[in-house]
Amino acid sequence: MHFKPPISLERTLEWFHNRGTNRLDFVTEEDGELLAMVGATNIDPIIKKGESYTIVNPDLKGRGIGTKALFLKSVYCFEIERVNKIWAYVDGDNTASIRMAERIGYRVEGILRQEVARENGLIDRYYLGCLENDLKKDSFKYGIEGQAILLYDYIAENSIRCCLRSEVTARGVGRACRAGFLT
Image 1: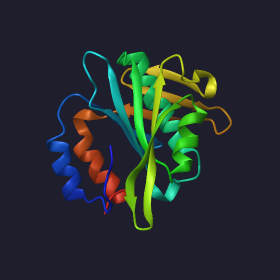
Image 2: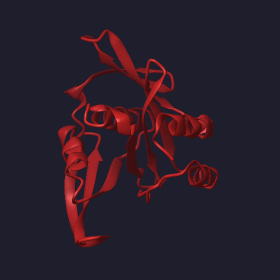
Image 3: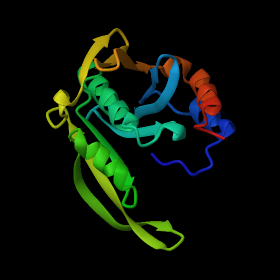
């Protein structure tokens, strides 16, 4: 799943209303603050695999939130939805995202060479995949509470919630705009 910046509220709402039902969309939040929007799209009903996306609040990048959000979403997909595989295309110049995914068990399964055009030439695109047995579930302490996955942080004595928000994602999009995710 790829977004061409700038990501606007109008384009996102249009996408939301035409998005189909073969997907899961989540809002990751802490104490009511929107940290990230994550999900799995194009979930194949037979193979049970879906494409992963993770969008972190730009003001919070570099703090490990993307890793936690990807982990929480992966746990939900595997343990609640019984998805078999989560995969993602990651541009080769996005080394932080590749490392983030590998840290929790995603594997580079292939490289599409010179697949994406950039101003200074062509770059590779990586195909990453994760099966439930690949996911390093001991990476974080977590729990399941209804439609939410909680990540416990005993040091800070609080938790990060990853909540399934497919029915209220339009409102979440508005929150994302206010949080600076979208323009």
